[in-house]
Length: 466
Image (cartoon, rainbow, N blue to C red):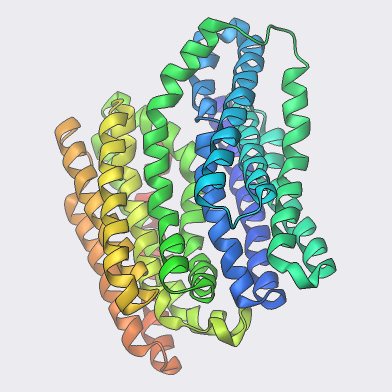
């Protein structure tokens, strides 16, 4: 048991460090390219990247989702399984490329075909990286997974920088080429290493098994991506690439909350599943409280320094401080949703989770189309908050039916109200630096003091859950 805990702790530290390093490279890219690229060109690339994010799901039809189950059901034949299913993904990406080529011929004739090809290669490279990373995770191969968390972002940054500096007259296309090459360099050796293993390329039972698991997940993945990416596409269409650039760049200030949450997600999910299986409700309620307190401290810290960070990091054209509050609210909603979505996945309610996510995504698109043309890009930030809150309510209702009383509704209500009220206060005092320092500085200090004074409760909780 002690060895298992030590292994889990090492995995947590490794994955958190790798995630922070990889996302740090992405954030460094935002800083560099908002200065190096024209605002419109930066916005065009942000819209392109939104499409690539959605294509990742389509070109590989989420076949890597089957890896986790296959390590249990086909543990003696896992090498053959991985090879055959990866070859299947090669077929699906070919089909996707043909369909996109036809769509481009009829509907997007203004887009060069090589750009469509680059987007497909870019997306499939990410798919292969994810495929190999899922395998590494199941094998507890910390080194391989850490490399895959870090290297694609670093190489995207380096090659994009080289091409943008070299091809100054075509910055958008230069960055597309550079980022595609960066990820492809990571994907190619991963693809080759799996395909060189023993086993047949075509094994019907493996393909049927993989499709049975992956196809239902496509809906959930696409709906989640639509929630995250449709804002950029709508803003680009109705307002322009410059507004998309501002939206995309400032989004990453609040992204620090999501990065921390994502870094902990896989390890946290395994731990929560264990608690759910043992019906350890009281333990999960304590976990909920302290997890949200940590996020609340980070929220106050973002509000405290956001205007200064924006001025320090970005060119003057990006100094739109009012974006910060709704972005932080959306990120906080995502954190809160994770508690309930884990209950849904534990009880295998993936279809309902997908249905709820689709409803929220469609709501977000409709609200964007109504309000963005009249109120500008800032409207998209608030429509996202509304959509995420609606999704949170759906997930809460589902979790209540599946496992009543697992988490405290009062704690969630207090957390959401605190985030929204502090966001309103931030909007009122964002331009008054001294007052902002006092209000949010005090919030950080008080929350930290409370956490310190309750450290015995926290330490006792950790000790009891080893």
